[in-house]
Image 1 (cartoon, rainbow, N blue to C red):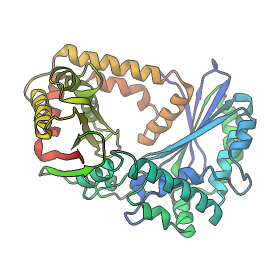
Image 2 (tube, rainbow, N blue to C red; image 1 turned 90 degrees about the horizontal axis):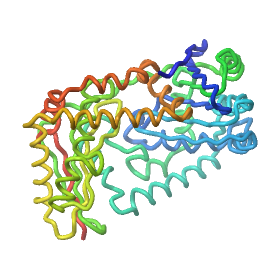
Image 3 (cartoon, one colour; image 1 turned 30 degrees about the vertical axis):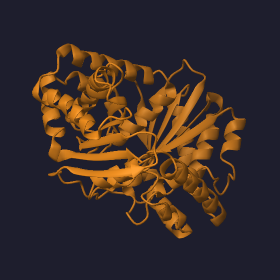
Image 4 (cartoon, one colour; image 1 turned 45 degrees about the vertical axis):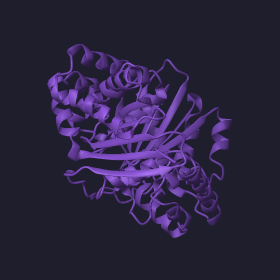
Length: 411
């Protein structure tokens, strides 16, 4: 059980406080309810660009990292299609330094042509290194575009096209910031060796006077049910053939999300999983195979990806995958197999909760979902999954008409 207090400032900033007196450290986590799905298709990659711009200094603090490091702290951030999260950890006695830094870049991020040019270059190099020049790097650009026709999940967090960041104008960046990076669109979590009363005073002092902004309300077109299988074949200069298959699955708050999560573990969550045992160890068709999903807030993608053993026919490999999926659809999974992945899930969740930084991030995420207390109820939802649920979801999700397939062939 992760205990916490919650309050909200008059400008709409939600604040959660989790006390852990066993550590001398404090964590300050600021989650902004903005991700790549909030971009327009003609200007993508902006949420990720802001992950970089937010470290470029604010009007009053030209260098974000230096004062934090002088206070014994460290920081990082990440962006997804659904959210942007900034976090830092520092000795608890220096907690106010983190409030000063985070509030100032929320209030008065420094916008300059120089800063934009520097960060744009960094992001463009990242795009080229990981998605253009890297083997298999373009596969998710193609897969998202294949699987989604309406929903903005059809582009990656890095952006749909390199030109969108290359052509980003200062005015576009300022408008994106004012729309999304404000108290009414943020969640602040403070965790560690802290007191709620202390956090309330610091929150009011450093964040209370920041204008709330206009609360952003989404109107995202949801992806219609897929009715026909989609396929494509590409040839690239890569060391081996690979196959990528996806199926649309339940959204994050749907009970079937938990069923699907367990199903992916059974199918391809490690060396003891069905796909690995059958297709890597026994039939030796694949050098590597995995099954997973992205944890997307809206309807996401269940994924199977595998790299073939040299000389194996692609159709033979795909037929072997289908054979294993047919077993999951037509036969109940054994209770012991289900209990095994439940136990694994419980241990992973418990291990993640050992870190106060992870607890702070999780509280912010579950508050974004609607209530930080969901963090404490999460495993119960996994416990409720039955073998019948697994079979039903396998039939509903893993059907041919819901599938998207890329044969990624080596030249």
